[in-house]
Length: 204
Image 1: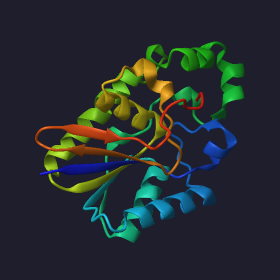
Image 2 (image 1 turned 45 degrees about the vertical axis):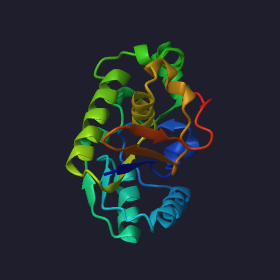
Image 3 (image 1 turned 90 degrees about the vertical axis):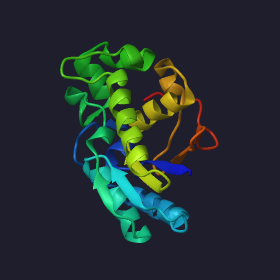
Image 4 (image 1 turned 60 degrees about the horizontal axis):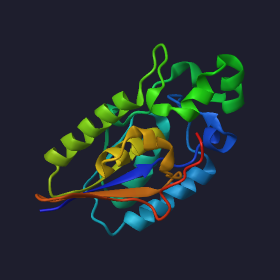
């Protein structure tokens, strides 16, 4: 029996196009993002998706709703796939973060796995909750074909876990808006298939 989970980065939002740190802001998809998700839905239409799980923010729920409408699969909101919490950066451009918070952003770029801040999640914490959530739905939906709609940071953490790589490789994985990663599990193996050019990500 094989369980397949497609990990999908939500469609593009205004923040993605403006190089802002969207964080946990509630912004909808941009027209470009809507088109990206409709294209993904067409790709998945023949895959017999049984359930779609989405993080709780507007951009992941909207992406999941489009998929659900076009594939017929129900959508469930799952907190485990929420974006990382770095609340004082939410909605700011990268230049604004640098201007307001001094060395924080350069440190995040250079050593993301070591980043700490008041009221902030670490990458290790994000990975722990996301992996726990994915393992839970793989166990409860064994033998099915699922979709999880989440965010770049969360999906990088998941990919590194199932690749057996350190969080120090966080910036080496590139996943564009609307791109799919496939995790397949059988009784004997768990495999992950990344997009054709997963390495050398932009520094974000």
